[in-house]
View 1 (cartoon, rainbow, N blue to C red):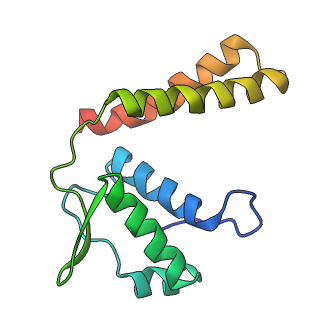
View 2 (cartoon, rainbow, N blue to C red; view 1 turned 180 degrees about the vertical axis):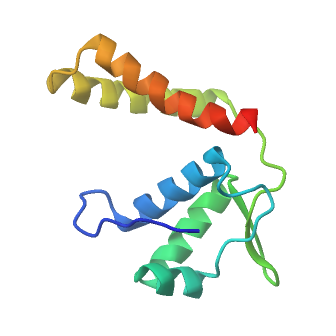
Length: 130
């Protein structure tokens, strides 16, 4: 697993790592049931504090993306299923409201915004075709 961390980004490091792992799963770069590096190994590989990686793994576990076994470590949840719950959809709506407002205030047209969404969404559909 190869992560690109931008240390000068306004996005916290733990959020960058978390986002990239979720994207890796969606793109099929990480397979269901695939083991992830240990906390120490991943922290060493990307040059961050091991507590940051531990925080990421625990958040991913709480959200159902990974499972953590004491002996075998962290792996992509082999039973990962769509979780389109009302709570998830409400959170998604809030997130999109914020992103849409920022795009609007930065002069992004409706057509450009929808094009961005379609392009990004379609990049994950490639996984379904494999």
